[in-house]
Image 1 (cartoon, rainbow, N blue to C red):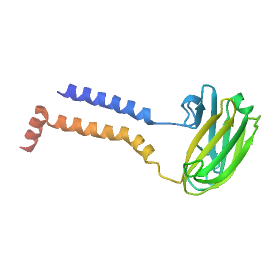
Image 2 (tube, rainbow, N blue to C red):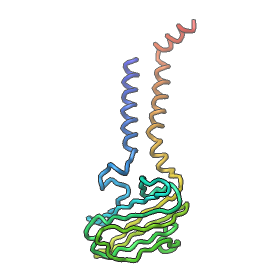
Image 3 (spheres, rainbow, N blue to C red):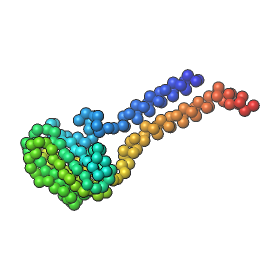
Length: 192
């Protein structure tokens, strides 16, 4: 019976570690295709967004979750050469609708042969959307939802699921282990 409990515990540990490592995400050491800051339109058109807040943390960079309001530098990398050869414009709105919400920053369409588009903007707490449009054939369109100084419940729950499952499995295994006859007999002998 102890062997079964050990096996069940080992299987639970392996399962929890597999689940936990699948929800862990990093910005720095992932391939371009897996980077959450990378957007793809069509087959071969990609852009990358980085946000910096030197007032708060000079070495940190963010993507769509910006930890605090204030002066923010948004840097868009036009990864593909095709984007560098077409007119590209940027619009940042407070909200989610490109046409109905307030525009807080606008970069008119122009060519960016170096592949970098930058904008310094003062962001307040709230939700914004960054729209990138390339006027090519076919036209390209990218969107980045930006959350400034907001708690991300989805990220919290996705990171909490692995440890929660581990805790529930350990409680279940502990309960089953304490109900075995050997443990019951041992406990009974300790009471007398």
